[in-house]
Image (cartoon, rainbow, N blue to C red; front, side, top):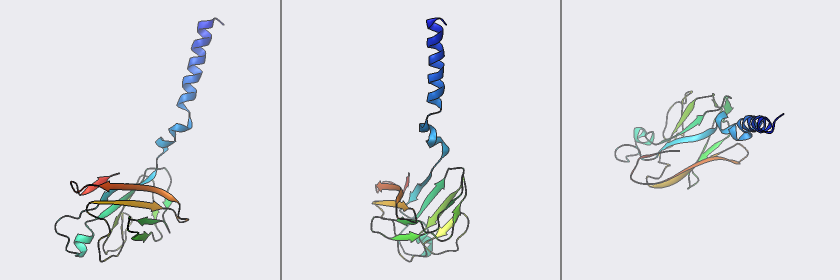
Length: 149
């Protein structure tokens, strides 16, 4: 085989190998905190509507359903929400609201009577049932009311 042909064949094999590297795993999706609405609209009156105006969204962009039972969502002050029996289906998002309400397949409620997320800076942390860190999202701004993670 002539040298130029061998080089072309070698380059084609290298290119095909690069396309199959494990670095492509990100394309497979993740389970992550996707958005925090930390400053509920209007005055902070502690009404249930105002409390539910702050929330965190968790998105499952994997191809597999994930059981969140026993996982925790915390802020910097260690206010902790422990997920009840709940499965987040592939490609779906769940919104975790601070106030009271009835849980559905798209919205969970912390059943709190006080705010969790600071209006200026905080960090949302998602941990697995065994306590290991899964994902975090931090914000540090009074200029905006939400953070897309």
